[in-house]
Image (cartoon, rainbow, N blue to C red; front, side, top):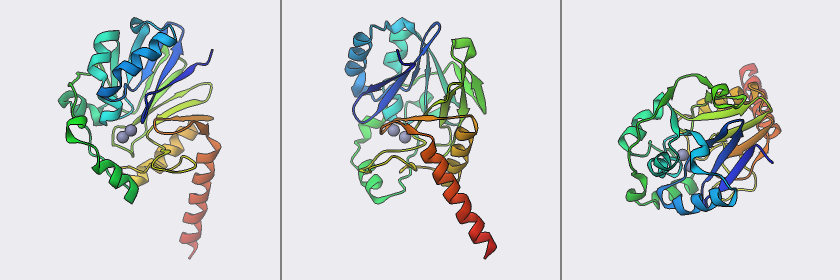
Length: 233
Ligand SMILES: [Zn+2]
Ligand SMILES: [Zn+2]
């Protein structure tokens, strides 16, 4: 059985990571996704209490909306980066900055009522990185700001990297790549470098299909040579 289990909730994909002592969940989906989520648990024969930890990729409602409900159901601890903590505690979505026209249109269609959710007090608030060994997974959570300032990724020692919205497959594109929504583009590049530096081989994202890390490496190389050319001029 695979270690990384994607649960496709519709617009957002969340993940379950199988550990020696249960599961670690990556994101929760929006508040409208709970029924679908429960059906998935049922299909996979996973009991809610087997989920020991919920890692929040970042505090946008499509990743956190169902958090309170799922926290109650599973009794899992909740982990978030300190930069996105306040949004969880307030039950609101962090600011979203579209980088393309289509992303802007998409964001503008979201009703305000969707973006608020039941507040949650996190149990674990991280800064630079956090080991998941105590949760039975040879992996760590690393800070990968850019999409929001508190976005994180999980990278396992086997090379699976669950990076959430540090890459996007939307809106309408053939191949996932640079996020279409980001507070800080420069930070996204740096975070990509870090994800690769941690040994990522397979990349799993929240909106789009998984892809090989080579795609990110290529983009990083291209950018590097562009920068080098510019500095030579
Ligand atoms: Zn987001
Ligand atoms: Zn998202």
